[in-house]
Length: 391
Image 1 (cartoon, one colour):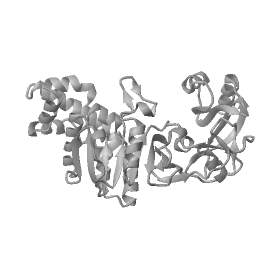
Image 2 (cartoon, rainbow, N blue to C red):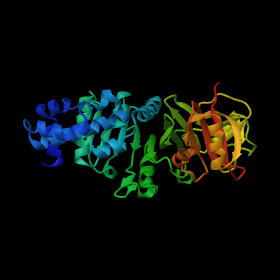
Image 3 (cartoon, helix red, strand yellow):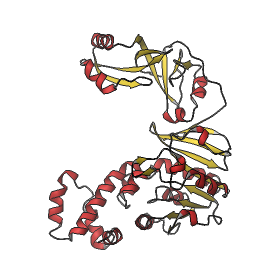
Image 4 (cartoon, rainbow, N blue to C red):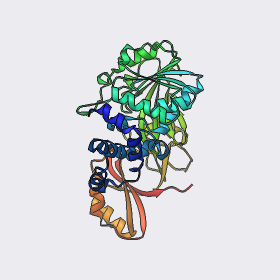
């Protein structure tokens, strides 16, 4: 039985019933479960159902339980799909521009097509892999979106996107050896995706968050997006604000845009230390955060902002600093023992020390908690000790 046949069997009434019964199955007991089910069902169907059950459990983190347990997945689909909150943010930007139809190229199992359709946008979803295309058809069906999502199994480079209001391209950024960092090694390459975007009235290209700023094509806006503090992706927008750089933080949707500020000044450590969100750092907008906080950098190469006053900002987490010490394991251990610190959060930037190794050496004991930053201050290895600031 090939992959397409196995998937078709999984979507049969018997396959769906079997899959529904595995919703809460324990992977640790999978062998016993498989043995029991094979007494009543074909072995190939049991294997397909168990594999799909595992994928659904993994997909909950990205899609939420309500959707994940109705959808179908492939291993690559779970791994590479956009997180729902990020895809919904992007779909909202398309809808806000009055976009009524989108050609979603390299669509995968529907991580972006689904939010676009839910925003009322008609989607042409194109993927060259036959199984992936079938999975997306099944997902559109399961979620009641089949009328808005047309699935086409084809090479995206051969698709005419002229009839559509907008284009979205999500090139493959993984190969046989893992992640691909060179945008021209994407499949299709960024240069092809850029050309496809230029032919559309409005377009978005999903790229890795580590894309160099000088690789952003002329005439595109670049947006870095984090969700819950984790940087998820960068998006290159065509038809927005050319040359604009922004950082968007979900779930709040707070957006910081570049103001063309010079590098912040380097100054001594003040009472507060601010740790900018990763999207802010990737977007090179630390200067904007420092300006808003009336602060400066602790070192010209380190993205920590320090200030004397506590100010509210969605773009950085604030800590009150109680001690500034030259780096030294013995000094830190003595200080933590004296303060009865039993819970230590270790953060680092510009330090080669491994947090877990340092934490083991501290032999912590006591009712109190602290945060230590292993970093550089004016070029010197330094420890900053403190705790989250209370506004």
